[in-house]
Length: 154
Image 1 (cartoon, rainbow, N blue to C red):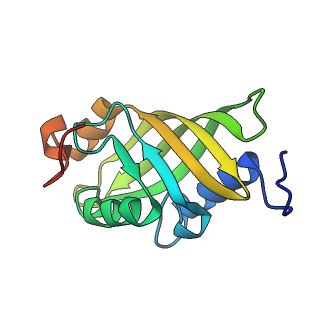
Image 2: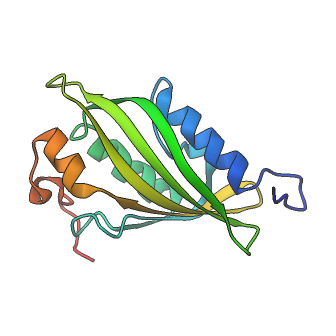
């Protein structure tokens, strides 16, 4: 595991913290305390307006606003594979999330791939490739329903 000069955790340790945070109270994949001030969060397969967020506060504001449209209680975070890279700040992860849609009781899962860059013990960049179709079907939403409200397309 990579350690910064300050002894801060590397990407694998922060990825494990992300797993725990998603299954706990106040579930979130990207807890504020793990994010660098200038973090970049990308979901390239998301609808326009949701694909790129620059900065911790911008991401947190977006996440809070979108939480009401994603009424899911995550119950399982199954790690499929974790790939170390030649860059000690970066790992690539494959995982499956299983949860219950709280408005319908439907239990569903989706497979995701993430690329995580950590520097000085904080997440600098998170790029997540989501199974948007599985997520939309579970929530009974169209991809357009998931579009960024009041946000410009990228």
